[in-house]
Image 1 (cartoon, one colour):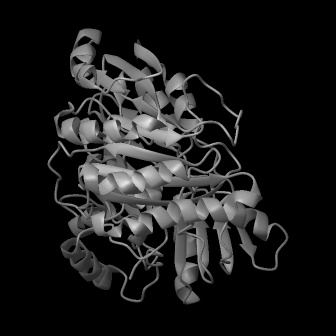
Image 2 (image 1 turned 90 degrees about the vertical axis):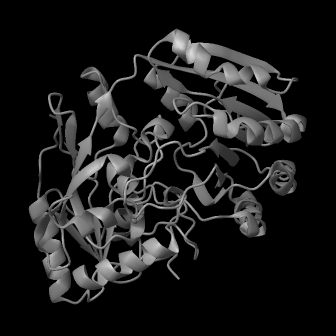
Length: 451
């Protein structure tokens, strides 16, 4: 069992010393929005959450909730009302006999995974170091080996939550089932404070490896056409993707950002399966890849430290971000003009374009999460130098705006903070009906992109 020692909740009012530091600390993104809650409460335990929600109800304040702070748009940072910071709630338990775990929302997914691996267990936690499980699980959860297990929220079997009245409740398939349905995929539109997730965990894959191949950007056309052709046939145990950037993760160059570096394409194929032989078979589709690669890292075992380092190469600390994303099944002919323009106009690092070959393999259970497609595209507009802010924001958000006719929705994980559809229209109608029953007074903020 992992735990932190509970301490007294700290409260910051707008005029208090330390208020703005507390507000900014709720964001992983250094691009903190100019929005200001009336009160910030740094809770440490369930009792703190109950007290804070009851106080908000008595004062008729709205409530925003932060777990790990990886909401790119800062959905939890709102004008007025109360902001509950759950990041200090990090207790967890693992039960190897029942293949289950319980986790509090502030726990980092990488911390959970490290503990699970020691027990020869696994859970599809988020790719980035430090992502709190709370927001990650609520919004769907696209994590390691996610094509094999489906979105992580599908492995949530129950939640404990504080409702709009400040009462502790439990939701499972047999108790408050509508709230479990809502908690699995409604993301920043959820109307409650989840204080504990009950998870189904899995055996640790016997072999975890990866293969990485780099191309010059002039092969983009060939790569996009090839990925569109083979994407749906890639085995589910392979998490196939490519990144277009000026900052490849292989060979490692962490912190060595060169604004004028050439744009490169980096294909990565993490694989998690029963053996090296099975991994090589799963990756055999790479034999049909386009010619012209510059570097290749053949299949190697992938220690988690190396895997995280490769990911975090693209997400350095203290970076400003303006992100946008879309699900799509657009053809290569549809997508290439936009992707080629994005490559031609690529800002300095750490800005990058991610193509994730999702091609859903697992049927979804009945849950709020309901939007996915063959391909996921994310445009991570990151800048450290303030002089490139306008250019980078335009690159990210302008590119996605131009692609709206090709979009079938967005992923809450990379919440752009604009009006967009993160769940289907049918699921939204059902979610709104559940909200009307459980939060009739609108105690909890809606998703900032709700329209």
